[in-house]
Length: 64
Image: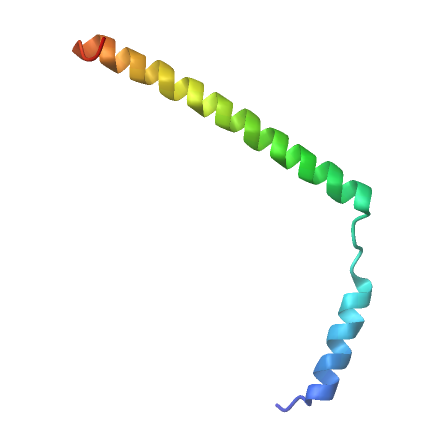
């Protein structure tokens, strides 16, 4: 089975024309949502880590 490079490039271009690209606004909104969720997740896991650390220190009598 042999496929020429020209046919391959033609097929790639045909598929690329079918792609629906997001608008600038949609890209910015999605980026903002991802950053907000990453920020919320980091705060959540920081607080959970602090609570678990406090519980372990109290349980084992470590630290001040």
